Length: 156
Figure (cartoon, rainbow, N blue to C red):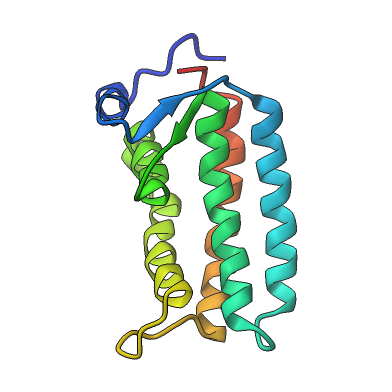
């Protein structure tokens, strides 16, 4: 295990100073629990693609969100306040080298579409079956990348 994870430390320190991240007890057990929930959500999302695309998309999105949260809780970090879901992505991206960011960046379009679906407006589309078909593999890739990071990222 790495003694200290320094990549992105300035960005994380800024998020803590701005009260967008808070320090909590680091928990590998909780991180693993989040990943198990994410896997279960993805299995359920696959069953609802055509029958309930909004619900299936919500599950796929939540799987990706839980995966990012697993990385942070493993380090003893938790997002807080308004925009907490966006902070998950910002904090994980700050700590991963550019070649490892592509999978995580998929979370951004999912987050925006989830908001449009959760809080609908006639001027914006909500999640459809095709979106779910894109979100499930994206969330799966985020989950897999997050799971690999847990053994390498030490407590912050």
